[in-house]
Image (tube, rainbow, N blue to C red; front, side, top):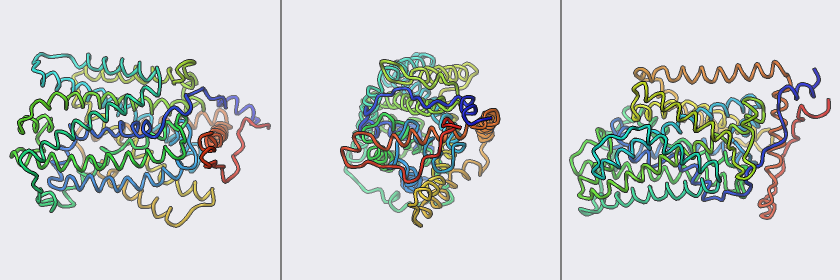
Length: 505
């Protein structure tokens, strides 16, 4: 079989659908990553869970988790500062470890964004119920109503304009964080600021007790890579994407450290058990005599979870675009709206799949809170896989460029060691049913994707070569955007592009 025939059978096309170029600046890219990390989610739901293990050392667990993930960012940004394209982490991994590894990394990210999007829908329903309660409404509204509201509005915005999505995400998450910080100021200063020596001295905390808390903290911080999926729509991507990735982690990490301190301080001052609080900020607002904060905090949680799902759909569809282009999923997903320049088909599929999933689970008796917890746990395995792949790929990529230094190897090794903490923590001690089978579900999903990729390449031996050539062409083009040329940042590939299987036989 000739390479030309193989390429045709692989259904890999070099024609890319049009996305809106130069649409997203640094603030919008930062918002994309921050929304996917969703610091509000941690403040309103997750911190008590971590506190139940780490106690007075919870703030330190978040600080340590942030430092650990910076090693992953160091590897990711080796790619981001040299090239950018739609669904970049998929392309980045392929450049370091080959097209098969890239496709599997993209496949894992589709899993991540689907389940985090599910958590966003469930969080929106939970915070909507909290809002109604805070407003004095004691009736019952079905979660189905909230699922549909979030899904319908999110689909409309994502389908309409990526700039609208980004700006709205920035505004909503920003307002939510400001509201929470205002309540935090009341908690810290209402009775005069006093340093919480128990927390500063990590009283009663030890490494053994913080093991699982650190796992929770790391999973609270995943999503910083989301800005890289929008590389094809970014302005000056070689500068703005890596900045957005690292600043999203630093800012949200700092916010979570502050909120851990505030919530532990506030609960301790009022003799409350933080680890047992299901809605810590609403409870503290009432305890500190500022119950009026319950309404804005609930609204902040609602809009933050809405932005989380929107960010997941935006990121996930930018992964499906190249997967559709390379024949791994339906080529219909490799298309954009002629006017809006958004991946409308993939966006519609994502939202329909999300709504069908939460509708089904709730219909069989699963509560939104249980769905929220389980979806976050399921997503974590996909993030771990993708982060391991990008961390390992970085030194291989730099070696191909002739730029590998010992420090790059050290950083990659440190990143892999740090990722062992959440990996081991996910299995030991053994979690209860059904969480104990979640790793198996992820492995089955990944095996299915691997078998499908093998079958595609077996049927058309030029598939992987065509994918590699297509990625090279796309990334070669992405290193020379007009904005970078204007800033004198024209970057060329340091090694020859691998010939596409669509080249002459």
